[in-house]
Length: 225
Ligand SMILES: N[C@@H](CCC(=O)N[C@@H](CS)C(=O)NCC(=O)O)C(=O)O
Image (cartoon, rainbow, N blue to C red; front, side):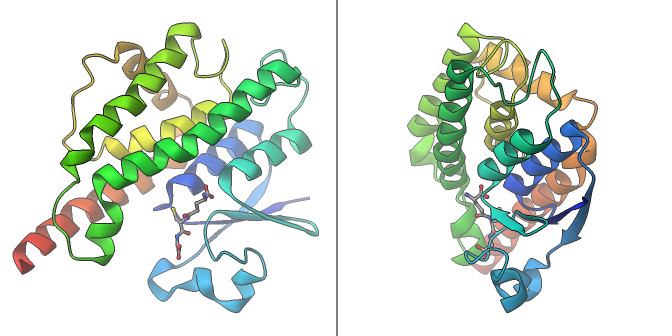
Protein backbone atom coordinates (compact mmCIF):
# COMPACT_ATOMS: atom_id res chain seq x y z
CA UNK A 1 0.00 0.00 0.00
CA UNK A 2 1.42 3.40 -0.99
CA UNK A 3 0.54 6.23 1.36
CA UNK A 4 -0.81 9.43 -0.18
CA UNK A 5 0.95 12.33 1.52
CA UNK A 6 -0.54 15.84 1.25
CA UNK A 7 2.19 18.32 1.93
CA UNK A 8 3.95 21.55 1.05
CA UNK A 9 7.66 22.23 1.61
CA UNK A 10 6.75 25.52 3.36
CA UNK A 11 4.89 23.65 6.09
CA UNK A 12 7.11 22.73 9.07
CA UNK A 13 4.75 20.03 10.43
CA UNK A 14 4.59 18.49 6.94
CA UNK A 15 8.37 18.30 6.88
CA UNK A 16 8.39 16.45 10.20
CA UNK A 17 5.93 13.87 8.82
CA UNK A 18 8.18 13.60 5.79
CA UNK A 19 11.07 12.76 8.16
CA UNK A 20 8.98 10.06 9.82
CA UNK A 21 7.96 8.55 6.46
CA UNK A 22 11.53 8.52 5.17
CA UNK A 23 13.07 7.31 8.44
CA UNK A 24 10.62 4.39 8.49
CA UNK A 25 11.19 3.68 4.81
CA UNK A 26 7.45 3.84 4.10
CA UNK A 27 6.56 4.10 0.43
CA UNK A 28 4.58 7.29 -0.15
CA UNK A 29 3.30 9.50 -2.90
CA UNK A 30 3.63 13.24 -2.13
CA UNK A 31 0.94 15.64 -3.36
CA UNK A 32 2.09 19.25 -3.15
CA UNK A 33 -0.91 21.34 -2.11
CA UNK A 34 -0.87 24.86 -3.49
CA UNK A 35 -1.33 27.41 -0.68
CA UNK A 36 -1.40 30.28 -3.21
CA UNK A 37 -4.73 29.02 -4.62
CA UNK A 38 -5.97 27.91 -1.17
CA UNK A 39 -6.11 24.35 -2.44
CA UNK A 40 -6.09 23.23 1.20
CA UNK A 41 -9.66 24.63 1.47
CA UNK A 42 -10.93 22.95 -1.71
CA UNK A 43 -13.84 20.54 -1.13
CA UNK A 44 -11.82 17.53 -2.29
CA UNK A 45 -9.14 18.29 0.33
CA UNK A 46 -11.64 19.13 3.10
CA UNK A 47 -12.95 15.61 2.60
CA UNK A 48 -9.47 14.42 3.65
CA UNK A 49 -8.87 16.98 6.40
CA UNK A 50 -11.95 18.99 7.45
CA UNK A 51 -9.64 21.57 9.08
CA UNK A 52 -8.16 22.38 5.67
CA UNK A 53 -4.58 22.20 6.89
CA UNK A 54 -1.40 20.35 6.01
CA UNK A 55 -0.08 17.78 6.50
CA UNK A 56 -2.53 14.94 5.91
CA UNK A 57 -2.19 11.37 4.73
CA UNK A 58 -4.46 8.78 3.20
CA UNK A 59 -3.64 5.15 3.90
CA UNK A 60 -6.28 3.01 2.23
CA UNK A 61 -9.61 4.06 3.74
CA UNK A 62 -7.96 6.05 6.55
CA UNK A 63 -7.55 9.80 6.14
CA UNK A 64 -5.51 11.37 8.92
CA UNK A 65 -4.36 14.88 9.79
CA UNK A 66 -2.30 16.50 12.60
CA UNK A 67 1.39 15.88 12.16
CA UNK A 68 2.01 14.27 15.54
CA UNK A 69 -0.95 11.90 15.18
CA UNK A 70 0.34 10.99 11.71
CA UNK A 71 3.86 10.29 13.00
CA UNK A 72 2.59 8.03 15.80
CA UNK A 73 0.22 6.22 13.41
CA UNK A 74 2.98 5.59 10.89
CA UNK A 75 5.20 4.11 13.60
CA UNK A 76 2.36 2.01 15.06
CA UNK A 77 1.56 0.67 11.63
CA UNK A 78 4.92 0.41 9.89
CA UNK A 79 7.84 0.48 12.32
CA UNK A 80 9.80 -2.75 12.23
CA UNK A 81 11.07 -4.40 15.41
CA UNK A 82 14.24 -2.63 16.42
CA UNK A 83 16.17 -1.97 19.61
CA UNK A 84 15.84 1.78 19.17
CA UNK A 85 12.33 2.45 17.89
CA UNK A 86 11.26 5.92 16.78
CA UNK A 87 8.10 5.32 18.83
CA UNK A 88 9.03 3.05 21.74
CA UNK A 89 6.78 0.13 22.65
CA UNK A 90 7.70 0.35 26.34
CA UNK A 91 4.72 2.17 27.93
CA UNK A 92 6.80 4.46 30.13
CA UNK A 93 9.18 5.47 27.41
CA UNK A 94 6.28 5.92 24.99
CA UNK A 95 4.51 8.11 27.57
CA UNK A 96 7.57 10.38 27.67
CA UNK A 97 7.59 10.60 23.87
CA UNK A 98 3.87 11.44 23.90
CA UNK A 99 4.40 14.11 26.56
CA UNK A 100 7.09 15.79 24.53
CA UNK A 101 5.05 15.55 21.33
CA UNK A 102 2.32 17.56 23.07
CA UNK A 103 4.91 20.01 24.40
CA UNK A 104 6.26 20.46 20.86
CA UNK A 105 2.94 21.93 19.74
CA UNK A 106 3.17 24.63 22.41
CA UNK A 107 6.86 25.25 21.68
CA UNK A 108 6.08 25.62 18.00
CA UNK A 109 3.45 28.25 18.82
CA UNK A 110 5.89 30.13 21.08
CA UNK A 111 8.42 30.45 18.27
CA UNK A 112 5.83 31.22 15.59
CA UNK A 113 4.49 34.02 17.81
CA UNK A 114 7.99 35.32 18.52
CA UNK A 115 8.78 35.35 14.80
CA UNK A 116 5.40 37.00 14.25
CA UNK A 117 4.80 34.83 11.22
CA UNK A 118 1.05 35.51 11.16
CA UNK A 119 1.49 39.27 11.67
CA UNK A 120 4.05 39.43 8.88
CA UNK A 121 1.99 37.21 6.58
CA UNK A 122 -1.51 38.58 7.16
CA UNK A 123 -1.26 42.00 8.82
CA UNK A 124 1.61 43.72 7.01
CA UNK A 125 3.73 43.84 10.18
CA UNK A 126 7.47 44.18 9.79
CA UNK A 127 9.21 42.80 12.87
CA UNK A 128 9.46 39.96 15.31
CA UNK A 129 7.71 40.15 18.68
CA UNK A 130 10.81 40.90 20.75
CA UNK A 131 8.72 41.33 23.90
CA UNK A 132 8.20 37.56 23.74
CA UNK A 133 11.94 36.86 24.24
CA UNK A 134 11.39 35.64 27.84
CA UNK A 135 8.98 33.00 26.47
CA UNK A 136 11.59 31.91 23.92
CA UNK A 137 14.18 31.48 26.67
CA UNK A 138 11.70 29.55 28.80
CA UNK A 139 11.11 27.19 25.85
CA UNK A 140 14.83 26.82 25.20
CA UNK A 141 15.28 25.99 28.88
CA UNK A 142 12.86 23.09 28.39
CA UNK A 143 14.98 21.66 25.60
CA UNK A 144 18.12 22.01 27.68
CA UNK A 145 16.37 20.29 30.61
CA UNK A 146 15.34 17.32 28.47
CA UNK A 147 18.81 17.06 26.99
CA UNK A 148 20.51 17.19 30.38
CA UNK A 149 18.76 13.87 31.15
CA UNK A 150 19.08 12.12 27.80
CA UNK A 151 21.08 12.27 24.58
CA UNK A 152 17.81 12.88 22.69
CA UNK A 153 14.79 14.79 23.97
CA UNK A 154 12.79 11.78 25.17
CA UNK A 155 15.21 8.86 25.27
CA UNK A 156 18.79 7.78 24.84
CA UNK A 157 18.03 7.25 21.15
CA UNK A 158 16.26 9.15 18.39
CA UNK A 159 12.45 9.22 18.54
CA UNK A 160 9.69 11.07 16.70
CA UNK A 161 9.68 13.53 19.61
CA UNK A 162 13.05 14.74 18.29
CA UNK A 163 11.60 15.45 14.86
CA UNK A 164 8.69 17.45 16.22
CA UNK A 165 10.81 19.31 18.79
CA UNK A 166 13.39 20.16 16.11
CA UNK A 167 10.76 21.79 13.92
CA UNK A 168 10.34 25.04 15.93
CA UNK A 169 14.09 25.47 16.34
CA UNK A 170 14.66 24.99 12.63
CA UNK A 171 12.15 27.74 12.04
CA UNK A 172 14.02 30.00 14.47
CA UNK A 173 17.23 29.40 12.56
CA UNK A 174 15.98 31.61 9.73
CA UNK A 175 15.86 34.63 12.08
CA UNK A 176 18.75 36.66 13.48
CA UNK A 177 18.15 35.22 16.99
CA UNK A 178 21.44 33.77 18.14
CA UNK A 179 21.38 33.80 21.92
CA UNK A 180 22.02 30.09 22.48
CA UNK A 181 24.90 30.50 24.98
CA UNK A 182 22.94 28.95 27.86
CA UNK A 183 21.77 26.01 25.74
CA UNK A 184 24.89 24.12 24.55
CA UNK A 185 23.25 20.69 24.64
CA UNK A 186 20.33 21.96 22.58
CA UNK A 187 22.70 23.32 19.93
CA UNK A 188 24.63 20.03 19.85
CA UNK A 189 21.39 18.02 19.60
CA UNK A 190 20.04 20.16 16.75
CA UNK A 191 23.31 19.59 14.86
CA UNK A 192 22.77 15.85 15.30
CA UNK A 193 19.25 16.14 13.86
CA UNK A 194 20.58 18.23 10.96
CA UNK A 195 23.18 15.58 10.21
CA UNK A 196 20.67 12.72 9.85
CA UNK A 197 21.13 11.20 6.40
CA UNK A 198 17.55 12.12 5.36
CA UNK A 199 17.45 15.60 6.91
CA UNK A 200 18.23 17.56 3.75
CA UNK A 201 15.90 15.49 1.60
CA UNK A 202 13.01 16.44 3.90
CA UNK A 203 13.95 19.98 4.90
CA UNK A 204 16.44 21.75 2.68
CA UNK A 205 14.05 23.12 0.08
CA UNK A 206 11.38 24.13 2.63
CA UNK A 207 13.80 25.91 4.94
CA UNK A 208 15.29 27.87 2.03
CA UNK A 209 11.84 28.86 0.73
CA UNK A 210 10.72 29.83 4.22
CA UNK A 211 13.83 31.94 4.86
CA UNK A 212 13.46 33.70 1.53
CA UNK A 213 9.76 34.36 2.11
CA UNK A 214 10.26 35.60 5.72
CA UNK A 215 13.05 38.04 4.90
CA UNK A 216 11.36 39.31 1.71
CA UNK A 217 8.02 39.79 3.50
CA UNK A 218 9.68 41.84 6.26
CA UNK A 219 11.44 44.04 3.64
CA UNK A 220 8.19 44.49 1.72
CA UNK A 221 6.25 45.37 4.87
CA UNK A 222 8.96 47.84 5.96
CA UNK A 223 8.82 49.51 2.53
CA UNK A 224 5.03 49.82 2.79
CA UNK A 225 5.14 51.45 6.26
N1 LIG B 1 -1.23 21.22 14.46
C1 LIG B 1 -1.21 21.02 13.03
C2 LIG B 1 -0.90 22.34 12.34
C3 LIG B 1 -1.31 22.33 10.89
C4 LIG B 1 -1.12 23.68 10.25
O1 LIG B 1 -1.36 24.74 10.87
N2 LIG B 1 -0.72 23.66 8.97
C5 LIG B 1 -0.53 24.90 8.23
C6 LIG B 1 0.78 24.84 7.45
S1 LIG B 1 2.16 24.79 8.54
C7 LIG B 1 -1.62 25.04 7.18
O2 LIG B 1 -1.98 24.09 6.53
N3 LIG B 1 -2.10 26.28 7.00
C8 LIG B 1 -3.03 26.60 5.96
C9 LIG B 1 -4.33 27.12 6.48
O3 LIG B 1 -4.52 27.17 7.72
O4 LIG B 1 -5.14 27.50 5.63
C10 LIG B 1 -0.17 19.95 12.68
O5 LIG B 1 0.82 19.82 13.39
O6 LIG B 1 -0.38 19.23 11.69
